[in-house]
Image 1 (cartoon, rainbow, N blue to C red):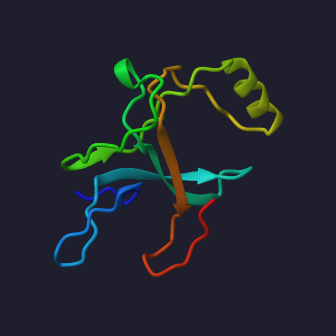
Image 2 (cartoon, rainbow, N blue to C red):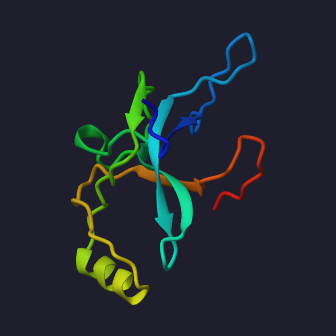
Length: 133
């Protein structure tokens, strides 16, 4: 059965767009997401795609190097779990969340933290022109 709260996001390559002879851009893969409530009373419905990599993990020999393009992946990436958070004081994040009346539990801390969380209106279509910020 199809989960009505699940959705899929297809992602373009962030830096180098690979173009085939047909003129179509190559894609690194797709990510499954989920629909959740947002806003003060959680009544606004949004689709969220969590933990989408935008560069290779900066660990080992890549630790202090410039970001490297993400490797394409096969199939659908799980976009329903928070990615690791870059190393910082998690108490600051918790305190800011409380100040803004948000319920936020910081994910694990890691140097492997070059991920994006993408949010879109739940009822958006591919023809909608949405702002990206």
